[in-house]
Image 1 (spheres, rainbow, N blue to C red):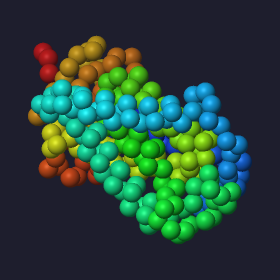
Image 2 (tube, rainbow, N blue to C red):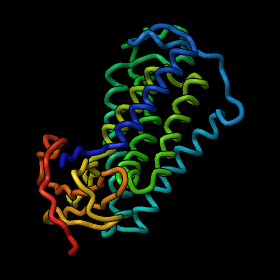
Image 3 (cartoon, rainbow, N blue to C red):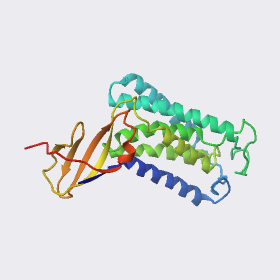
Image 4 (spheres, rainbow, N blue to C red):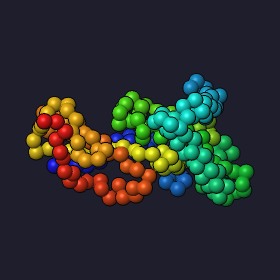
Length: 259
């Protein structure tokens, strides 16, 4: 039997990033580092209104803070809230440093996307708001996405914010793409040294049962799905285990967990 780790969050985030890129290119090819930056017609109405962007940004920060205080750090949800706070702090600090380093002029102040290093008051790159929104939702998507696929809908929040920031001329297209990438990288860290689980898809030589748990040693638990000759395995990975990336595909000895 060969098992391969499934990381659907990677696929989802790749699809979202690709969608943002396609949107940016489709709107108008332009300048900037990727040749996709252009200043759009100003649109501060409806769902794109700046007021709504602020409500989303502030609301997420308040919700995560209150959730962390309410749940504490002793259960899965509480640890995820605290990871979201850690991710937000890291992503926010990274964004601030990059803004001060690149000093890019915002599209509200110029129609030239190639104006960089124009003084520290110019802080277009990257988008701080998209960075933070993305870093807030990422831990929840990583932690709960494989159990509750509806959680992936949270990805719509940074997508909305990215498009809205471009429409009100707060950022260039590459600003929001960079913010999304930074928030993504900051988000999926381990949760305070506790075990994390990863789903695995296993091709089996035979089917032992229907929806039955089986033991593959230690804390590794799986479930057999008949017909497809597949099994899902959840493997806790501890903070001290640094080698899980090298085990993306391996053979695991299964032991039947029932008579």
